[in-house]
Image (tube, rainbow, N blue to C red; front, side, top):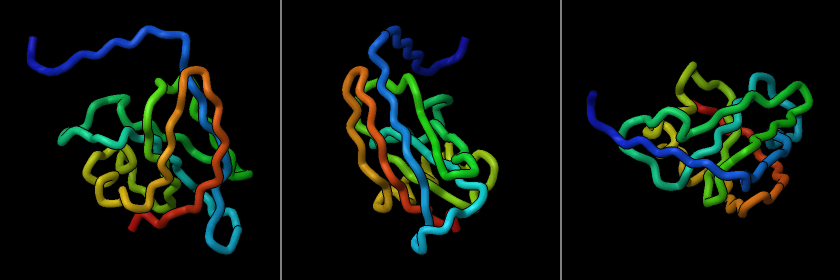
Length: 118
């Protein structure tokens, strides 16, 4: 019951993106969340559409089994719980995104500058 869209994708051609995060002064900030989002965002949140990962103590992160396509990638410090998955929050920071295109089974490595969420 209810309305909405259900999308199922069954494929073995997922891509991966990994990398490191650093601040302007190349110091490693603590508690950095990396956000992977599609460039076109719906008005309301769609579970799983925007992915987040914590960078580890060395600043490393990795997203695996990502459907091929275009993405926006961010690294934030100071996020409130759930804020990184909010389409409105992502739209407010879209000009600061690292743009990324992933092909089938492609692996890319990037270095991201950390943004302050507020």
